[in-house]
Amino acid sequence: MNSLKLTSINGEKNKRTVITVDNVKVGKDFVVIGGPCSVESEEQTLETARKVKEAGGDMLRGGAFKPRTSPYDFQGLGLQGLKILERAKKETGLPVVTEVTDPRDVSWVCEYADVLQIGTRNMQNYSLLKEVGKVNRPVLLKRGMYSTLKEWLNCAEYILAEGNPNVILCERGIRTHETYTRNTLDLSIVPSVKEVSHLPVIVDPSHGTGRLSLIESMSLASLAAGADGIMVEVHYRPEEALCDKDQAMPPEMFARLVKKLRILQSSMIGMNEQ
Ligand code: PEP
Ligand code: MN
Image (cartoon, rainbow, N blue to C red; front, side, top):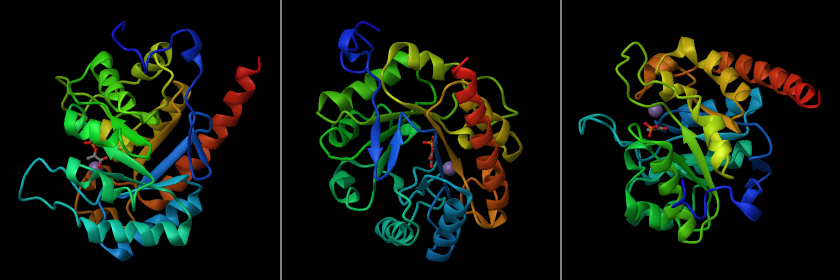
């Protein structure tokens, strides 16, 4: 890890990065981000956002620009989607995490996003990384599906080197020979990041497993592994989701999950005091 100057833990940089997003402190609190894979309509996003808020979620996620594997799949609502997210924030107070896929969109998407997400497919899009490094918004940098820890941290390094110190790493599963799950969630990366970097790291068990039945256990395991938070896809009507239907969590299940996480969190505080 010796080529990493800004993201690695060394000497005085041993201090952990805490990123403030409105009243949420990523790197200090255990942060729960919930919301739809993509913004599909005002009703869908607002209804889902209300449920995320009611359940005790800390931030709202939702994609307006969707990097889809097939060009014929729903690509997102673009600006209209960002305006819907803005309305959802106005009503619920939840800060918005949304993906940006094109360097030309970064500066204006900042008007709608509290956190800019870089997806797994764009982790090594260096012109995009440089662009988000120049703006005044925290960046949620997903791990590339084929990336090593060092490659991932080097991408974070691109953002920090441009002057933006606020990067949240997000493990979202990697490609392995396993096909039962959509990806293989690599939870060992969480304590590994903590060993070598001061940046906060969260986990996305939705893309990490692709299976609704596995999201709760992997969320609890993420907290136990020392993650700074999770990001979960929630949909007010999962069966109608236009994107990632099989992993869309219904609001009641999300509310139960948040409750369990808060219980585990408080017992872990007790444990750490032993
Ligand atoms: C997403 O979070 O909406 C997404 C597309 O995730 P990933 O980039 O991890 O596939
Ligand atoms: Mn998705």
